[in-house]
Image 1 (cartoon, rainbow, N blue to C red):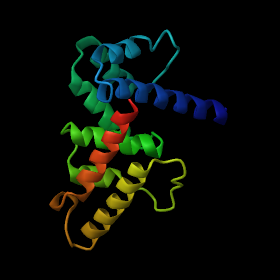
Image 2 (image 1 turned 90 degrees about the vertical axis):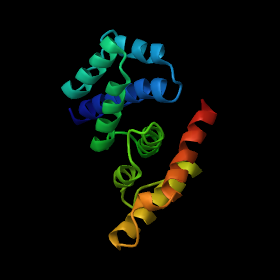
Image 3 (image 1 turned 180 degrees about the horizontal axis):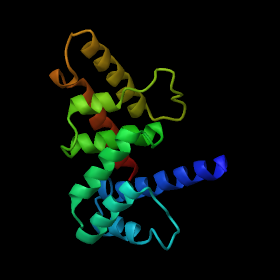
Length: 163
């Protein structure tokens, strides 16, 4: 039973990431909508909230639904670390997350296993940790300098280079 639940969550996250990737990285609205339209054929079942956002996107093609979906996925911390950081970078670049929000969404445990993460993702996590520490110490907030913004920009550029 536990294995089935874990498999379902992994499948749900993979599907959602695929839809987000098609739209935000490949900038292919048609492919993203096609992914959503295949959801039931592929036997993908999603939580009601995710399903409703995807169906509204499928019906309207409105990017607002994709950005809401992305924010919801980030708030729930359901993606693996690399994809989580990549999605943060994409939403910051698109103007749908502030640097302060991004910094908060990148408050991950320093004990996190970073094996297999790209250099740009590791760097973004390190910078986020430093900016969060500066915020706690009252030195400055993440939006008061460009370090985190530039680190997230590097993550996005590395995603585009792979695409």
